[in-house]
Image (tube, rainbow over the protein chains, first blue to last red):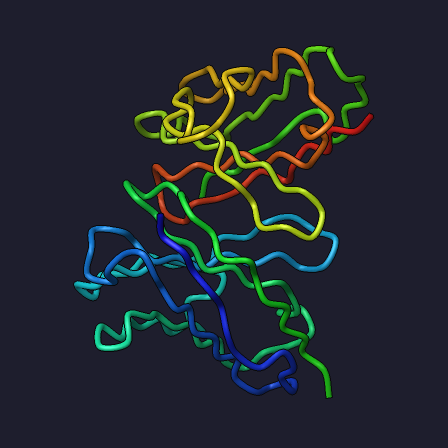
Amino acid sequence: QVQLQESGPGLVKPSGTLALTCTVSGDSITSNNWWSWVRQPPGKGLEWIGEMHHSGNTNDNPSLKSRLTMSVDKSKNEFSLKLSSVTAADTAVYYCAAASGKRLNNWGQGTLVTVSP
Amino acid sequence: EIVLTQSPGTLSLSPGERATLSCRASQSVRSNYLTWHQQKPGQAPRLLIYGASSRATGIPDRFSGSGSGTDFTLTISRLEPEDFAVYYCQQYGSSPYTFGQGTKLQI
């Protein structure tokens, strides 16, 4: 069973860069999973951010594309998200997930990131 | 981008009753690549159904999914107390893989 754990700062200043890492256990980052990010603003619904395969292929949400960078670190068995020029609208719980056949099979527990001065 | 509209927004039922949740897509979902996720307060979502009608590992058979094209349904045959949660549909046939806004199932 794949297990995922998000980590990163819980507070980011406006106009700064949000950076999160997801550590994977129980599976290799070089498997055929697509490594995904989803976010959920407080009290609201889920928003798909994007996904990355270890080969380097990515798919992402056009609404975030210009600010989004995703990467995979094979040596550490982890993948990362960077979102630049953040505003209060980026405040959310950020989830990482493993997608097998593109479906989100396994989720991390989520981490709250607040954008505030 | 495919827009998913879930109805109703809130569904009030009692344990033992049958629940029917709807998810309608703005255009046909490729290969019926549609999932249903359950989310309880303070928890991450959990995959229930994929491919519109296949149960994920460990999901009780009281949960069933149906539909194709643009209209999909999640049915819970006999509600258990632990089933009261928010349910989201998501399509993964066309990027961006959009979610519906959710249906809250409450007692």
